[in-house]
Image (cartoon, rainbow, N blue to C red):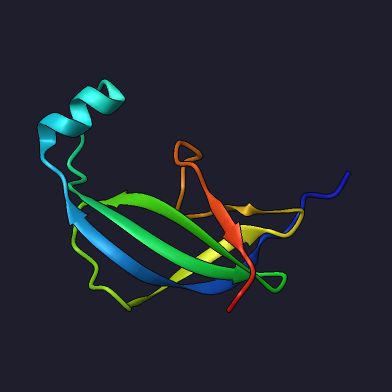
Amino acid sequence: MAEQTWIATEGIVTTCRYQCRGLSTLAFGFQTGERFRIAFDYYAHGRLYSDEFQSPVAIPQNERIPVTYNPLHPEQNSRSHGAVVKTTRRPS
């Protein structure tokens, strides 16, 4: 069976929050250097998806970021590790 090719799109950063190292240790059970929680939106198949990821650097609100997503499961994207609850909604 052929491997599914993910589709490239752009995400828009909606929030960037600093999180202390202690919080990430408690939440994930290990220490990381990633101190910022980045929330972003992206469009896939005419729907708007939201997700979050951790980053070692701040990314300003409204910054465009590259994202790829699985066309068979557009809620799966290259920025997330699947630990965050994703939302989907129709564009307004």
